[in-house]
Amino acid sequence: MYRSNINSKELIHFVGIGGIGMSGLAQVMKTMGFNVQGSDLNKSKNTDRCKKIGIKIFYGHNPKNIKKSNLIVKSSAIKNSNPEIIAAKKNKITVLSRSEMLAHVVSLKKNIVITGSHGKTTTTSLISKILSEAGLDPTIINGGIINSLNSNARLGRGKWAVLEADESDGSFLKIPINYSIVTNIDYEHIEYYKSFKNLEKSFLKFIEKTPPTGKSIICIDNKNIKKISGQIKNKNIITYGENKNSNYKITNIRYKIDYTIFDLSFKNINKKNKKIKNIKLKLLGKHNVLNATAAIILCLNLGINENIIKRSLEKFSGVQRRMTKIFTKNENDFYDDYAHHPTEISSILEGVKNVYKHRQIISVFEPHRYSRVLSLKSEFSKSFSKSNLVLLCPLYAAGEKKNSKFNIQEFAKSISKASKTQVIIIKDFNELGKYFKKNLMSDELIIGMGAGTISKHMNALKNIL
Image (spheres, one colour):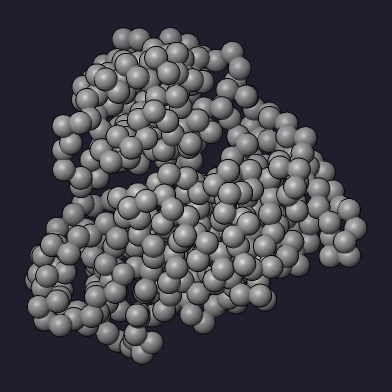
């Protein structure tokens, strides 16, 4: 458990401070007046943001970094074999997980907690935008950079905190909840949960943690949420989706080049039928309509005016690495996206194809983790059907040991066969620039996808081309 008596004078050291969730929490704590420092292997935009507000950063992990520390906060990506963690335990310095520290920080706030396999960062960002526009000045700790803030975190003066909760290691169960959202449940993080059934059980626990005074908002378009919905004991559940049995039913989705429009039908507080028409969202794809719907429901239940909600969604300027346009070259548009799971890839490509029906779509895909690719090989193979070409880049291991069961030639063949598309293997990222210099045509839409280093390489193309 976290300690409830953390002193603002104590030196709190973040191991892995460059992670998006860790850097956000560190920034909020620094703003609150805590004495914060941290270490990471590499310099990044996240460490730069921390340094900008006065957080001391060490590059590399070394026991010397923690010698004056009173408390250690550990990223879920950091193993117990890390030299700073070993030194902390040797010197009997308390080590907390990020989620335990987060639970301490937000214990005095009313918390809106968003989780799910996909879409939680965008949903968190949309809710943050609406609450901010409504003058509620929320505290925000998100898993992605919100463009309007140029940050993933801020300390607000209001009573609400909007928090993205990570389900990857079960830590989302430690955060105190007032309102909750589950966007979807997918086959992810089985290396931690050992089985999909255990993953489902954790989500059930999360939903049932929501108190009777709050609401748990769940998407029953997702087959896995629909499957477990009958097991939920709580009565304070709100369902949403295109599903005809949803409490909030999405209808009449229209896809435009720069935005999506949809309607939302539901029963209001007086049990009368209500429809909000022509909700305009500056994001593409059905998955973002679902994310926006969760945000709308939450904010309506907080009593926020419908017109404020609609205006906020229309003004929302997005999240970095969620179909972020990098540059245009000879009428070819280059985008950067975080998609690294088959469901995310399919959703992005379908959303783009719905709008740009006649443009050639090139997917530049960096596979992420041997365990993910091997366990979902069939799903990955089918997910590129809306892409005219896939440039398959080297796999990013994310700390995993090399697995000889993964063969990139076989993986390429399976994508080509199942998605009925051309696949070209890119042996290293220097080859990527050479490929586009030689083969770039006109009016093509190029999307870099992955959770590893792909963003850096996509951005580098701007100078190469």
